[in-house]
Amino acid sequence: MRLKFTIIAVVAVCFTKLYSQKTFAKGYYIDAKDTRVECLIRDEDWELNPTEFTLKTEENSTSKVISFSEFKEFGVNEFKFVKTKVKLDKSSDQYNTLTAGKALNLEEDTLVLRVLIEGEANLYTYKNDNFTRFFYNLNGSPITQLTFKMFAQEGGFGKNNTYKQELLNSLKCDKITQDDINHLEYEKDRLSDLFKEYNLCKASGMTDFRAKKVINTFELYAKAGVGISSLKYDDGNYSADFGSKAKFRPAIEAEINLSNKRKNYSLLIEVSYQQYKSKGNIGFGTTDIEADYKTIDIAGGLRKYILLNPKALLFINGYMTYGLAGSSKFENYDVRANVSPSLGIGCLFNKRYTLDVKYEFGRNLLSRYVDLTAKYNTLAVSFGYKLL
Image (cartoon, rainbow, N blue to C red; front, side, top):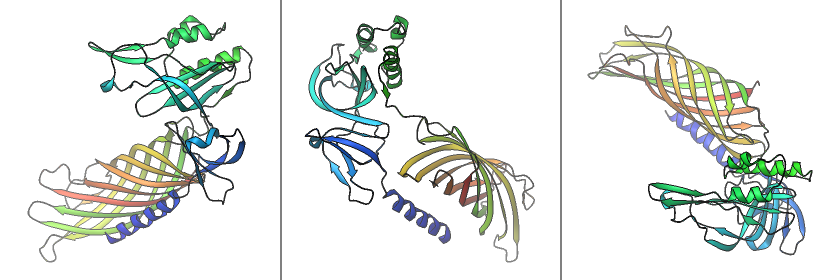
């Protein structure tokens, strides 16, 4: 058990040190005096619109936070943000806090808008914890909110979808039909596709700032490591501790990426083999019982990635594992296949190498017996290499 906690502590320290390294990429910003400054900007993969950002002048220089009052625009990777004064409706989109009435209550505010499509027709978005709004302008005209509001009404909620008429009036193009507008959702990709179509129709220079697909859909890893397993038996009257054993643990892991840009969420299937053989004493002196457990484990689960730096991604896994007992023996008892949960944490290096720690919670090898339990736990440390 002490060895298990030592391994967990060492891995945790390594991840903590890695996490302290932030990702900076080549970018720029325009300061309050309209001067363009080339620099390195920390890519935060912003889900919500920022009010500040962090930069470095050089890779090894000290980072600096640029506050809301110090910039007019900045960009890094697929992100471009512009600060501008607009009128917007701030009513909540959350179902439990919707306001009554379909009319917008426009307030003037200075916001940092994310640019989605840039061309003759521009599309912007602003998102906070309570609502998401989209804005647009054509040929340098003032930036205006696309009219949309969810509002409370008797028996549920309604939607003010005036933005559809606004776009039908503004985006005049033979390739954009009334039916296209009728089925248009107030949503980032659908609106972006419409503005992209309009700019292409007008043959104007156009930039799509949405994230590009840069990862493979399917990846395959060969893995090898050590599984530290323990087994405890209890029949209600007597118990036996079989101790911890360390064994070689080979595995193959298939990953299906669910994201459309850098890694975020993935589905996992891992097939591994492990063996545990030991004897336990149930308290009658030399009375030992023997366990010889061999299993092919098929684990399915979900993985969440967290960006550490350009060469490293932290990931957290959650699995359900189905253990095929095969020719396993536990005295004269029948060992059956069973299902147990597992959790893991790991890191992907250079898009090819993995190191992960996985804890498989107790599976009962004697699950077919009402009064008997044989709890089997495993802490596995594995190194992986990307094959595909």
